[in-house]
Structures are given as C-alpha cells and as structure tokens.
Amino acid sequence: MAQAQRRRIPDETRRALFDATDRKCTICRRPLDIEGGTRHIGEMGHIAPHSPDGPRREAARPADVDGFDNLMLLCPSCHRTIDKEPGLWPEPYLRGIKAEHEGWVLVGRARPEPERAPAGEPAGIGDTVEIEGTIYHVAGDPEEERIADGTAIVSRAFALTPDGGHVWLRRIAAGSPGPKALEWRSALAEEAGLLAEALPGLPPRVAASVTPETAVLVTAVPSFTTLAGFYDGRGREAEAVRVLGAGVAGLCDGLASLHARGLAHGALGPDSVMTDRTGSLFLRDAGQAFSRPAEPAEDVRRLAELIHVIVTGRPPVPLVSAGVLNPAVPERFARALDRALSSDPAARGDVLELYAGLRI
Image (tube, rainbow, N blue to C red; front, side, top):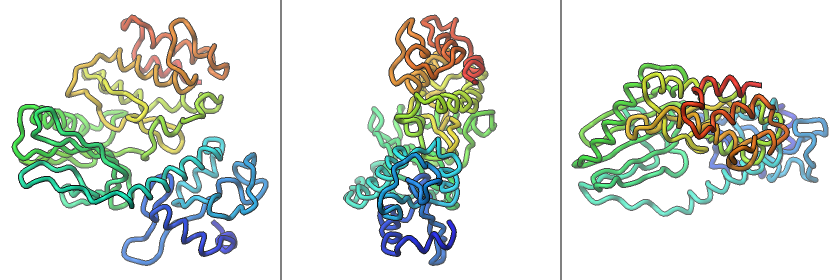
C-alpha cells in the first residue's frame, strides 16, 4: 500500500484491526509481526474499493470507505492476490472471511484452558507441537478423538511453520498402545514412507517422527482454505466453473499416483481437499489409503460428486446432467461428470480421464 494511503487510515482503526485479527493475516492466518523486533508486514486491504475504479468496483462503497468494517488486515501476498484477481474474491466472500476469522479470534480468547490429562494418559496437542527441534504453531481448533480401545488420542490440525508456511499435522499419542493404536501408527508410518517418494500430486512430506509414545506426520498444504471454503456460494458462476475445471489437475495427479500403487484415497470431501489462492486443488494427505481398503473407481465417483455439488448447488440426480441444472456448465464438462458418476464402477474411467473432460 502506498504511504499516502496508509496515512488515510486512522491509527485507532489500524490498532483495532490488529487486535481483532490477533495480528494475523485474515486470509492465510500468517503471523504479521517480524520476529525479534517491533515491526510488522501487515497491510490494510479494502473490501469495497477505496476509489470508484478500484478492485471490486461493482461493490457498494460505504460512506466510511477507510473504516474498520471495510478493511481486512492482510499479508502482502494475500493483499496482492485479492486485488489482482477480484473476480475470484468478490465483496461478499471477503466479508465472510473477515467475519469468520475475527469471530474465531474471539472464540479463542474466551476458550478456557484445556484440562490436562492424568499422569500416564495420552494427551492431545496444545498450541504448539515440537518435532525434531522445529516448533509448529497450531492454527484454530484441532480435531481430536480417542480411538476405540482407549489407548491413544489421534490429533489433526492445521499449523504454521516458523517461517509462516502452511502445514497439516497429524499425531497419535499413546502411553501404552493397544492393537488399534498400533494399527493407526502403522498406517501413518506407511503413508510417511509413500510421501517421502515425492510422487506427483501427493502432498510434500515436511516432517515425520516416531517415538515409543507418539507418531507424527506433517505435510505441506498451499493454504488453510478448503474446497468448501473457496467455492462457498459461488461455484455456479461461469468463471468459477472454468477455474474449477482447470484447478483439479494437481488433485487428479495425486489420486492417479495412489491408484498406480493399487491404493485409493477413500476419504475425499469438501474439507479434505485444499485450494491455493488461484483455486487449484490439492490433497492434504493420503486419506485412508493405508487404513481402510477402497477402490480407485470410488475416488473417481466421489470427486465427480463433489464437483457436481459445487457447480449445481445440489447432489447428483440420475439422468439429470449438471448442464441442465446450471447452463454455465459446458456440455463436455457435464458429460465427464455423468460418466464418472456412473453406477457401474468399470464405466467411470480413470481419474485422469475425468480431468481431461473437465478442462475447458
């Protein structure tokens, strides 16, 4: 942001934004303070444009265009992204992101201190996780569950690396692991071995560690934005359909890498597929490839189902094409979905054939 524009925003507004966001980028959640100093890299991004011909010019400009409600605290990268591609970041979507992030900050501040597990009992993760000397800062609330035999806790969370990178972290903690806990540990170790091969489309392995008490696997993700979050309320637009058709390339490559090994993800969902700022899709992990047998054809069907819901707003209906439900869906795109949704697994084709049909 130009120095003159910085001066237009009152100091009290800037202080309020830093406080409301916990001094993190509203989109990528990256901490904005420069470690070891008093400076920061935060920028004030306008939702409705400051000038009539700015990004998102179709949005109604409020009377106080430099007010708190029309500003987002952003890192320089996210600020450039939303202004360079305003069509992918419309005003209602940005306001939703702002409200969600600032709301979670309030929830986090009101949350009581977690209860500590009794001595000898496996415990979940806290605000930070240390793996081989590297500290990962947990972002948001972790998903945690005690496995069936009660001997271990499985934790899943998004986290930030010391340099602000985005990762997906899974940990199994067990004091005296039983059979089920050992199965979980074995599956995580097998996945870590596969990801170490750096196969096309599979998430990069950042760290892996196994001790008598814990097993941890950390994978890189492009952002903390899920498929559901990125396309929420805007998947029916022609531009979104085009972006989605091109954006599945990396995701399909990852599934193809699993299928070539005789494995299947088995857990594709709107919150288990990640997006980068351009709408490209990526796997965050190998799903249930090593814990629950599944068929590649089921991955193909499930991916087609997810895409159908995004571009039409509703689940697939037999004999009703996506192009009928949404005229913005090209005929070739709709035919590819219809084939992949076939009730006959053998008729669905492979995942790369699905991708070829979705490209517009």
